[in-house]
Image 1 (cartoon, one colour):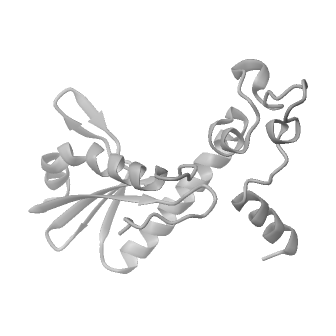
Image 2 (spheres, rainbow, N blue to C red; image 1 turned 180 degrees about the horizontal axis):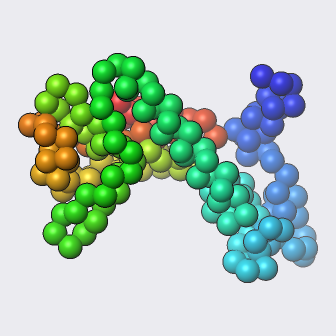
Length: 167
């Protein structure tokens, strides 16, 4: 790792990136995001810049898609079949899990999430992602011709934390 990237990673991990909100504490200066603040009115803090800023949306999606690609290549090398972003209908609702994985008569839906980590956010996000797709049992088994179904979530924190509940 390049030294500057290592230092940036340390600053990111300990919330020391100099954002407007961080550097203008107790001062009456602008704290709105310098990229999207005029439109959104959002304050420029690390959570906003890393997760919600519309200016960085493309980078956020690219990071998410790269993780999906890595997981697909690992699972396919282990003999699993993977379908990415398939549309599954249950009643009037349509769902789009990141991955539908099948192997030896078993299938799983998996959703990848990269939340900003704080006290309980990773475990909470993992639980929500798993519960979200429980209703897809029949649709996923029909798609993959499997007999067993389960849901999975892959949650990695924005600053590098790993969810203990990951598979």
